Image (cartoon, rainbow, N blue to C red):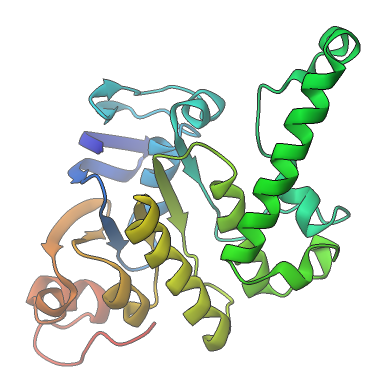
Length: 259
């Protein structure tokens, strides 16, 4: 689905990402882990079109998308969420979902006059879709709540819901578990699993909670100091001396629990 080939990016004298290559297979939930400063978010930004790479190529379903801006990638089915949710705080939860679909008849003043029936039909379809998303995520009771009043975990669910309002093929999740209580974290993990299993979503997930990574992801990629140092299933990586060194400063003792 996503092929990352020898991607590098420097900021001045700091080499944030160095020659990183891996593939996110179609239908997988691929994890991306590593200590703070490993280069994970920089790599996500490059893949998502927010940053250009200094070198390397990125392909989406075989198409070279290197350097394409975020809005073009959105229309190609590659979307991203952020560690800190970017909701429209003074709009309701349902309205936050309904503004996501693009290229609608109502966006044109002329078409809204001459093809008003099409605008009405599209608005009704989007409303139904938004309500279906709310039901899927089990947050229908929040449909009329202002998004700014939601808890951190509820905002993460809303972020996930907004990806469901697109024609997403691949979703980059940046620390979905950050700031989420354990109850809502379980609901969020279940929603990701269902989207993957029932709707065929492909995910790449940055996360510091190793228990969440172990539940969701296989394979898992490990970065440290801007480089990819290991990959495999979480059980194997917990015992990898190089991974333990990167996280703990020791290759011989300690363990990788939930961070």
